[in-house]
Image (cartoon, rainbow, N blue to C red; front, side, top):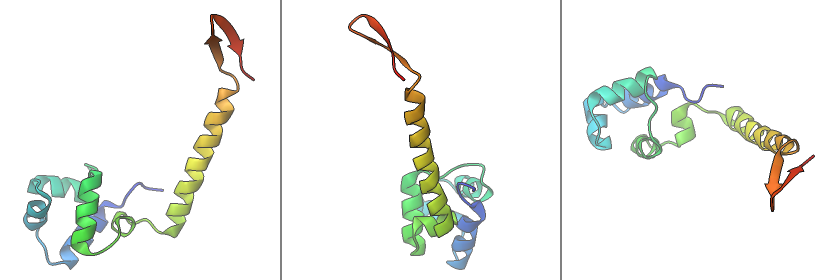
Length: 104
């Protein structure tokens, strides 16, 4: 799963008949940054995602090119990471009140 599909930014921008300069102006950033977003060499900040989604009248997920399967997969990965983190805690040693405790 890709974090985002950079070509979606360009697709929505061109669909809106907007130049990179115009989008950059609305976002308060430089035109080269828009090109970097569109090529995937730079990741937009959360405020930029929000503003672009609002400008294009779509959700951030749509702009990122995520579908419901991606969202479900992302949730599953988060649950898995949380579970793995809890399992790793089982082998951690802690020092409590000057005593080394092995937690299993």
